[in-house]
Structures are given as C-alpha cells and as structure tokens.
Length: 439
Image (cartoon, rainbow, N blue to C red; front, side):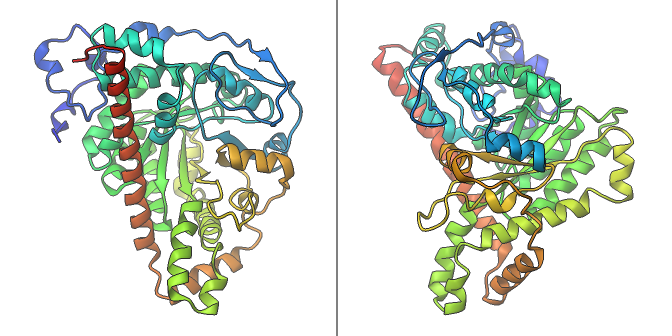
C-alpha cells in the first residue's frame, strides 16, 4: 500500500481543491479516502424534514425505497434513559432515505453511528443510491471516490436532522459518526490526514470522525483531537487499550493550545457482545462447571470495570485543569449491543450498562427490545465487586484479557476491511451493469 506520510504537511483545503496540480493529486493513494474531487454542493446539501405518516406494526422503521415514514411521536423508555439516568441512546444504522431517522429521533434517539459494514449493507441492498452513483460515475469519478461522495451525503443529511439536539445540549449530543477508511487501521499519519480531510469535507459541527483504537492509531487520536476535531474512537475491546484511548484524548486536549476546549468532544466505543462471543467459546473449551457458569458474563463485567476506570481517569488535578478550559469528558459508548446468542436476554448488553454520562448505540434488534420491555435504572456500577470477581476468575482460568482484546480488534478491523472491499466490488458491478466506465 502506498505511503501517505508525505502528506503530513498538506492542509485539508489543499486536498479538497479540485484545481490542484496533477503532481499534488498524484500523491493521494486510493487508501487515503479519495475525496479530493468532492464538490461544493455537498457542503450545502439541504434536506426536507417532512415525512409521510404511516402506521407500522413495529415501533421502529427500516430504510424504505422512497420517502421517510413513521408514526406519531410518543414517549418511550429512551426518553427516560436520558432524562432519568443520563445515558444517551444512539442508533447504530444509517441508510437512505435518512428521513427514516425522524421517528427514531421522535422516540428518543439522540445520535447515529455508522461503519463500513453498515454502509456496505445500505448501498448494496438499496436502489436509493443509484441516481447519485450514476451521475458521479458519468462525471468521471472512480469507484472509491464515488463511494465517499455517497457516504458524505448521507452523513451531512443525518447531521442536519440531529442539529437541533446538538444545539439544545450545547454539543453534548446529536452526533453522527463516519469512519475513516478501514485500509488505514495500521497507518498513523494516513489516519490523521484522512480524519482531517473527512472533517473538512463533511463540514458539519456535529460530525464525529471515527478512528479505530489500533496501536498505530492511538497517536492519530491524540493528533486529531489536538487539531480541534471531535472523535469517536472505535473498536475498543480491552481495559488496557481503553486506558490508552483516554490518555490519547487527554494528551490531545493538552496539546491543542486552545483556550476553549468545549467544542472538542469524544466518545470511546467499547465493544460488548463480541467479547462474550469469543469468551464463551474459550470457556466451553475449558469445559469445567466453573467455566461454563461464566458464559455470558465476561463482556458486561469488563464493561463495568471500564466504567470504573472512566470515573478514575476523569477526576483529579490533571482533569480539573482541563475542565477550567471547558473540556468535556470523553464519554464511554457501549457498542456491539446486539445479542448474538439467542439463549441470552435480548437486552443483555443494554440493561446492565446504564449509567450517567454514557452512550448506548443500538441496532434495530437491541433498540426495539429495550423500548418494548427495557427497565430504566442505574446498573453500570451496581455490582462492581462481582464484576471484579468475574474478571479475576477468568484470568485464573488462564484467559489473557489483553490477548482476547487483540484478537477481537484484529477480527473487527478485518471485518470492516472486507465490508469495504465488498462494497467497492458491488459498486464496480453496478457501474458495469449500467454500462458505465469509471477511471
């Protein structure tokens, strides 16, 4: 893969300018983000907030072929989750038409997360992207550049929907997350440049640039925060890596040189269900009654200890010095909240992780389950000693938490890369089927 370390001195504006010389354009490898040709119309895209009222059997709707839809707003447990316990419910999905998000917002959703797998599903299974894609390819855009334009439009339109929440909370909520290319997970400098570039092109106050918590990207997180860009750190699977993420955030705030830190925010996306998926297999291999009894308990236990660390790190003299400049805590965000094992409660990765100043991002399954029968009460630190006992018991069985985290991280990055490559292949096929030629 081509190196992009020689781009370190380029400004995002230089990358965006489509009139830049051929020599400067040639140094942008495909693994960067191929967004240089995005035009000004994306920065001013408008979105109508009207949608058709239709009755649906489900509390929530999925992406439709045309027009937004939904039913009349009503109070749900999601409103209680935020108002009574201080946890922000976000939706882990994004596709066209983005007006399908309106009923989610009405029922209490306060932000949206996306990732390469979500866009792979959205774009490959919907015809809603065809018209824009055809126009892009006919205008000479290559497949990856066209992909990023599709993504940026969705992100911008979703940001518009969530702006009222962003304003009402003074920048605490109302975010929409977009991830840098998964091809950059091992590229420190490339991730920094891609993050700056995406932030410049999306050009929305309430966008979060997602950066994976891989070892090479920890310094990237620091540098992007230091440049004043808000970040969603994703793919965190272990306590040790989570602490490195917190330190990168604090280091970045301190290095920013800003007198007002109030608009630089971050969330740390701590993955949950995938931990149990792997741990359960390991426990079944051990096979003892004690091991089997711990199935389905590892993920929530580790999450509880992550919250304990969060409370520790965002207190004390170092943090208080940053608070004086307006700094906000990097909230813990519970990700991977859908239940993979049907034997477990369908709210297993939501209900036990409720606590103040946190976020829970939920796909359809988890969201509908919690709205239907979730109980709102503070649970995240209700059984810390039990969580510590589970964590220690697993260690005594020979399970190395850090190695588990490393394996899950590698699998997560690989999964996003495969989704990304698969989608590019789908778009190439779509271009071919339309008898269009890209270059």
